[in-house]
Amino acid sequence: MGGYPAGLGGKRKMKIEIKRFDKGLPLPAYKSQGAAAMDLAARETVTILAGKVGYIPLNVAVEIPEGYWLMVAPRGSTHKLGLLMVNSFALGDPDFKGDNDEYVFPAFNFTDADVTVDKGTRIAQMLLVKNEKIELQEVEKLGNPDRGMLGSTGSK
Image (cartoon, rainbow, N blue to C red):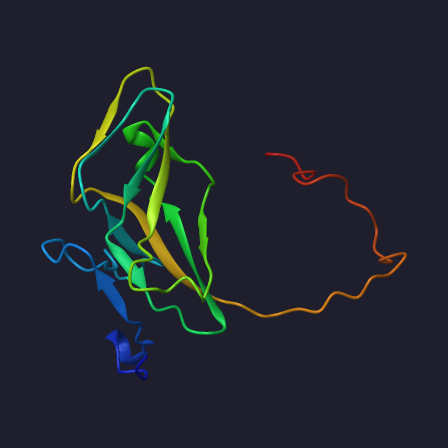
C-alpha cells in the first residue's frame, strides 16, 4: 500500500492496490466530481433468468487496508435493468484481499423476463469505509427514551 498523493482540489487520496482480471475493461473510477463511490463494471456478459439469482463478476480484487472495509452496492440505476442486489450491499472485510478474491454482484432478477447484463456495464459501486472496532458493555438499561421500532418516524 502506498502513501497519500495529492489529488484533485489539493485533497490527498489514499492509494489502494487493485487487481483487474480483464485489463481490457477500465479501472473503477469516480464518474463525477461529487461522486462518493467508484463504479464497477461486469467482467463478462451474464444472463439472469426471470425470478432467479445470478452472479456478475466485477473484475476487481482489492487490497483493503487494516482499519477499513469495502462496501459494494448497486448503482442508483441498477434497478432499471430489472435487477436488485440480493443482500442490499456487500461488505468486504480487510482479509478478503487475495489474488483471486474477485468481487461479484449477486443480482436478483425481479422481472418476468430474462435480463442480460453486457460485459462492461456499470452495475455496482465501491466505497472504502473506515472501521472502528468496538467493545460491547452489557447493561440492564440504556437510560434513553424509547422511539419504537426502526422506521418509527414515518415516511413524510
